Length: 496
Image (cartoon, rainbow, N blue to C red; front, top):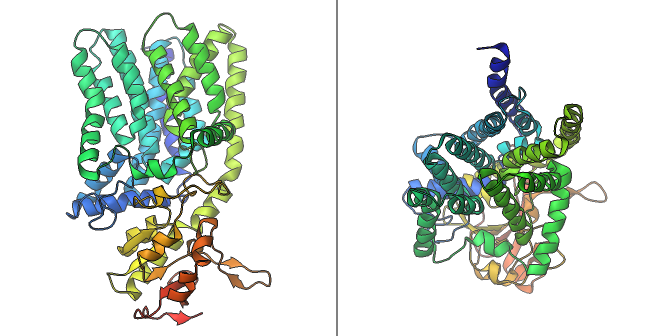
């Protein structure tokens, strides 16, 4: 084997190592609170309570069923879910870069660099989301491996069963991967198509049937509670696309993917994968984007998008290697501008999930196990405390989704609330302002209600039923909360 061939074979693996190191450099930024919601569902499942957040309440409050099942399997084997989430996702970042590098090498064996793989490895958004969790980067890796397996099957005259299985698993991890499975099935209408269709569509079809029978719904509550009117969501989705373009270049990717699609000779994986990318982008616009930074909803398609963008750039630049190299260097350099947000994201995490875990542990020691707690950040608190949660944002109940959205709230997924419903649940404890204390105008600690909690604290029944108390939180500052009058006080609680 020549040195040139050796370099070409090693390039995707080298990019994979860089991608893993890049993702690992964000350790300490996560997992995010929503990942802890998945952990609690997974724990309740393996402990025999069913797929529930609160015992007896069949609500699908997670949007990545395959990820939840994987976490459940890890818990059953005794793994720590936080460590599992991070390790698997870092590995997935490496696999995504490797698969894209191999895909480029399969189509362009003369290339030494596996250039799209290096762009994937250099993308901060993908590295950061590997630590945040939620199966986002695992989905990116599955889609990239699906594209590679499909290309290899077509090139070698194979049946594409591995590609079908990979896209089927991707659609189970997160259901919008169906937007790639459908073009695959349509493109593979040839001998043996039924087996490929079953593998590509079967896992999601099975989950959809289970979802309907077990939860009684066609979509998870997490989707319905966040959905707004069509025009509002499209406006928010376009804003999200614009922001995401500055964070990971997804807008440029779409343009270059369109060039690749129009330049392709006849049907095939490239055109079908480009259609999947376009459909995914349209879907994200339709649902109005997401509240997490760094383009979470676009991260799963970034590896495939990077490959398609390079195919488009190759069609544009042709043999002008110097211009193509300059474009690559410029793209990689622009992405690195997002590294300046590291301190901001690290501080946001340090103030949030660790605080909520400490709150959950201290509150669980201070109150009876049957206590109900109403709050908005339900993940880490609910995971650690094991208490019954009254979810004020409606991710784990089917009541808040019936409330009209508040146009004054711009945070996606936080626009609906129902103060009367929260009060009707008669939680013993209500935590407002995410359990945070802010610095007041004279330097004193100050509790601030979030926008969606104002109708609650201004409700006449709130002051009639609840008294303010303070509880020391081991390892953090005190928690100021509201306690149901007449209920036995939490151990160690003091009046404010």
